Amino acid sequence: MPTLLITMQSKVILTIISGSLQGQTFEFEDYSRCIIGRHRDCSIQFADDENNLTISRYHCLLEINPPAIRIRDFGSRNGTYVNGEKIGQRPAGMSPEEGRNMTFQEVDLKEGDEVKIGDAIARVSLEIASAIAQESANIDLSSFSVASGSMETGKMPQVRGYTTLQLLGEGGMGAVYLARCDRTGDLVALKTMLPKIAVNQRAIDLFFREVENTKILNHANVVRLRDYGCSNNTFFFTMDYCDGGSVDSLMQTSGGKLTVDVAIPIVLQVLDGLDYAHDVEVPCVKLADGRIVTGKGLVHRDLKPANIFLCRNGNGFLAKLGDYGLGKAFDLAGLSGFSVTGNSPLGTYVFMPRQQVINFKYSTPDVDVWAVAASLYNMLTGAFPRNFTSKKDPFRVILEEKPVPIRWRDPNIDDRLADLVDLALRDNPETHFKTAAAFKQAIAFCV
Figure 1 (cartoon, rainbow, N blue to C red):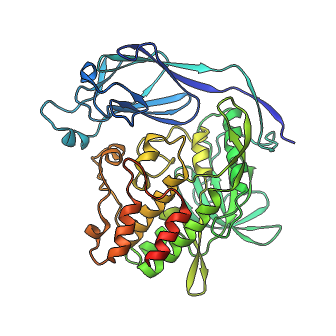
Figure 2 (tube, helix red, strand yellow; figure 1 turned 180 degrees about the vertical axis):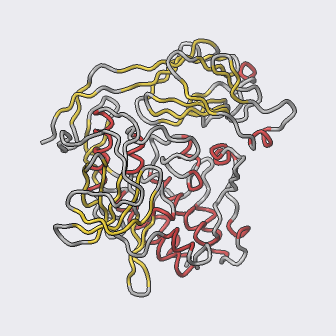
Figure 3 (cartoon, helix red, strand yellow; figure 1 turned 30 degrees about the vertical axis):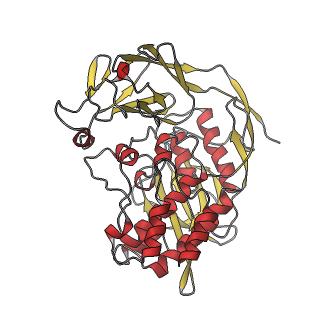
């Protein structure tokens, strides 16, 4: 039976103390991405009228991971101010298009800070809610340490129950190793993740709740979570080992892109995995009142070629969709620090539709379907659907620019397939394909 945990939950509160929205408050208890401006897509929207002309359509962005909150100006006409100091504004005479290409400072906000946008002023407050009771994820957390861990460079991690064989890859939060399970002899992918900041019980609850959701996935085209825990102050989990590597790696060894004959079978299998995951029963869904209930469907929210793994299968590949939420949950829980806006583990922006930027928290299955289309585009051309540069704000590009037609990247792609990919990448005002099954059917008919 689930046990009852008493946890403390941080909350970020934004109160408008002047301007047309004066008196309104906005509360954030979980990771949120909040766009402020006059456009209808904005999370905090000011009326698009003469009273608010000093506020740009897309004015600034808040990234919130309670109790942390960060703000960035979007190259607005009149700038954004924090405690009276300007953090961004395009110069007089510069067009919105030119302003979009400028790099602006990001500022971490704290208790009592005031943000001025046009004539509106918002005050930031941080609140620790009273203790709340909620069901844990059927996991005994008493043995898990959250002390910061470290491993010597080049030394294989010692994780109970496993023999580590070789390093497969590493990143900012940890590393992935090929390992052998001492009990079964099976080869597994062992992922270790090092805590980087002090965390509380709620953070651990959140991470392991995501573990509970991920471990129920059981499909041929989804990488299976096998085990998880904490050993030597290092979080770990093990997954199916895919001997063919990732699609991203396959592209690199194939000249930067794949042929249609290789890419299409992979994408069809990924869509099968998504169709299953979008309909699976999910044991630990948090409601607004804090209760944990059973829900339906998991949205990946970070689908890309680097997260599609391959097992060699005769002359072809068995494709498996991987990284189903654990890396993102690790960051969301505050175990790795605050993410970098525009380079967030909460979805790689080059494979994001507009809907995921506008409303990450309530992303629906169609954002994954769009990401499959973006991945197919990338596989066939080696390019991304939108043009990103180091000087352009990536979220602004997603919000305002259309995907580049795929035949502009490669005129040799078949017309019918090109038209289908372009159709699947429409995301303004909404995506075209709402389900993985619908997109799979369209591809099968096309090719």
